[in-house]
Image (tube, rainbow over all chains, first blue to last red; front, side, top):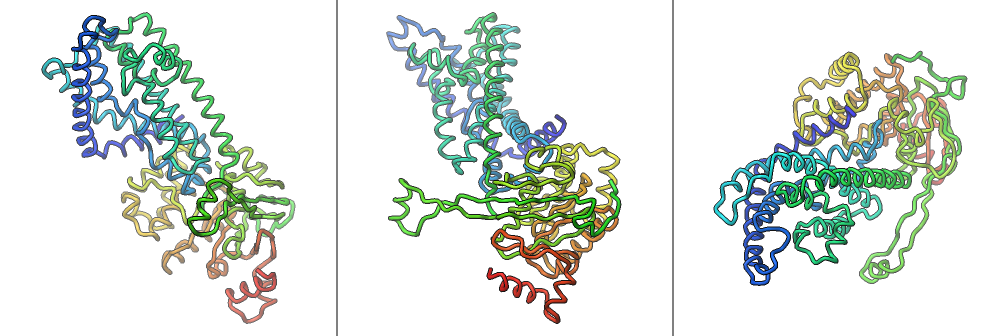
Length: 270
Length: 279
């Protein structure tokens, strides 16, 4: 355990060095946040939307979007660690394999740490500004203290689920030798089904059913709706258990797959 | 950590490393140059099976320094990878210190150190000492042992000025000395060195050689070394294993080889041996 914590710590400290990337990221996130909110404000002002209000109210949606932008590093699948891809395709994995620890655990710790470092640099500035923006862009505080606590717990669990999902992208590179295809495939499907393009409650019913059956929405859609109280407390607590179940399933599957990959691994290069 | 000092236990009562009929082949995608061939390969890939190792067997006793030599592509690195638990061979058995490397990988690798001369294990953007501290936690090295090993390595490899420097700002020779130190922090009983002197200048080479001798003599570390630099072999190894096209061609002392090819330089002797085996 100690080894994984240390590897994560080193990665975390390494990630904190990229301050100008974070500053640029914050500006980009505001840009996207505003654009998304403008689009949805336009949708919500349509007569049909006024007659049949969507299950996600506009203030809840605004919170949903700012949380997305603030915790982007926790929820997107295109956030990738070039170093691990390089280890596999370049053959430096040879060194990782002569360490007395599990590769899956080691990579999981590294990936988790770099996402944490990236999010910590970005989330506070974005959130602190979003609370003071003029209407309709202003982000509301959480529905209640209990919602806030459940939001924090579900966001953390969601991050763990997301890292477990992203592990499949890395493992696939053992076979494909290039991260492009699997990042695109898993990334596009995963991010759409997590509600990053269209919030899940605004999807047509049949699509919502698919999204609810997949693990992706538990990483983003679920915690963001818990925050605004759009998902009531009882349902939220039950959701935490489902997140945990997905986490266990994904980790077991990932570990089985990496075991297979390592059995037939070819360490590239001489 | 200090092992009984026993040299030349070749096949004797205490053999540390035992390989028996190790085989390994790789599937290599092949195609000729040109657009047409590239398009064709989209639909039907052609593979050839390259036999990297066929029936390699040898034993190495505790405390030996063995030079593992052969032309490019002979299978040296493949053997090292199999012995360090990274690659799964197609067949044959390998017992090292009572372990089968690829089956008990995690338990086994605690006892070995590996240096791949063409790769890096140090974290690129952080000072060397950060990588060392991480290795300390990965190998669960007790603090007192870590301290003792680090100071010994710092002294013998002359690292004192380097530990605080980010790896990306080290020269190749400096980095290689740090790489070797990284592989020995946990006090392994066996050290695999895959071309440790590649690209090094004379001073660094001599320093590395001197160091290998020291840890072998003073700590009884068994060393298996691959290299293309015959002066490495001359300076270090009393026993050599020559491998070519996946077969073991010569296993014996350097002196016996010298006897056969009197008055020739080391490089000439090796070329002569290659020629004899038509490599």
